[in-house]
Amino acid sequence: MRELYWFQHDLRLQDNSALLEHASASELLLVYCWPDAPPWCNLKGMGGQRERFLRESLQSLRDELRAFGQDLLVCFEAPEQVLPRLVRQFRIERVGTALSPGYHERRARETLFHALQVPLQLHSGNTLFKERDLPFESGALPGQFTPFRERVEPRLAPQVVARPDTLPPPPAGVNFVPLEKAELPPHTALPLRGGAVEGQRRLQQWVFERQGIAQYKLTRNCLDPLDGSSTLSPWLANGCLSVREVAAAVIDYQQRIERNESTRWLLFELLWREFFHWRARGDDVSLFRAGGPRRRLTRCTFEPRNFARWCQGDTNFSLVNALMHQLVATGWMSNRGRQIAASCLVNEFGIDWRYGAAFFEKHLLDYDVASNYGNWQYLAGVGADPRGGRHFNQAKQAAEHDPDQLFTLKWDGVRPQQPEYVTDAADWPI
Image 1 (cartoon, rainbow, N blue to C red):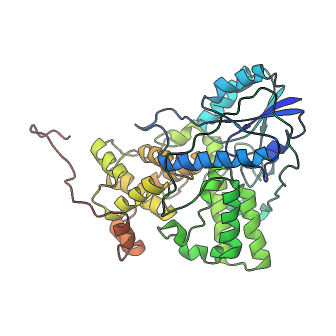
Image 2: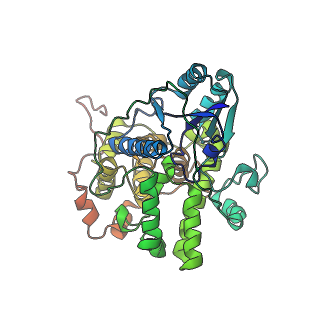
Image 3: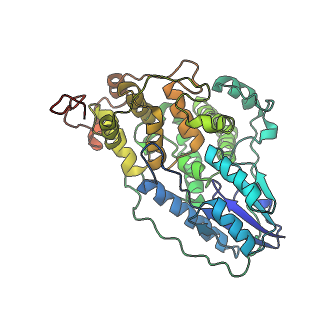
């Protein structure tokens, strides 16, 4: 059969069982559709570093594919538009893709089911478990993380499949246009390059060579990424690494070198990612509602000046400013930093959490719809947090995580103090 495989968040050959399902075709067209989310919360498009990392990831995949006599067709149209046209043009008989969570992703698949006029085969996505292996009935996923973890953790035994030995050639006449390079280089504070080769290198380096995993629980709250974080999440988000590969490496380290609270904590973080994935699949459009799936509305407003100050890192909270400057410059913010910055927007400024989630979506190298929006809902108290949200004391967080202001000064966090509100001559807020 002549087939088409649609890459989404699985930009790799290693441990890509979905791609292997199509490796026996007579001809195989490999396609990626550039993400173009609709305008959302006054924002649109990608930040420079996120776009750069994605372009590098695509180029790395193309380089790997060329060793098999293959290539990747990168299209800058919506999949609902371009895939039916390619199916007709190259007489494709079957289309395959790996499942991704998200409301827009689901709507695109539904449209394609009717528009392709050939079978659309859906494969398991970049998760630790396949849906059939979860110990829950359909629609009975726990609403909180702890009961989810307690049920699935004993079943964690990741199986990694090898990369394909061969791939069928593409159909004749495909115009594989070179991919333009990104305008920005990586920031010197976080010189991460996209692609599966770089992801594999970082995984081996951090787990086995430097053994940073041995102290992960102690260092994970460091604000600078290379001081303690694994920094594996950008490759996981783009699918350059599979989550099963990461979990298998951690378990291998536990069996051959050492098992401690830090190694268990990284698996714990991977299970959080898993939980948010399956929650997003079930929550669907509720993932983007102000009140979450339970319609739990909280008081909020939209004061454009305060939102702009938060985005630009020009608030009266120096550590938050530094974190926002770091995010825009590098495409990264630590987990602790994300909680501090999010709490500032939601609790100090009283702004709808979705505006912050959209800003993170624009800039994060490791943007993942389920983890990003799930974590924002959690902090805002409309998601999976049974305690109803988190309000961080900004002064306490700065004292604990940047007591000497080294991080704050490095990222120009100290800004002139501003009044909370600015009014015009008639005393109206502006």
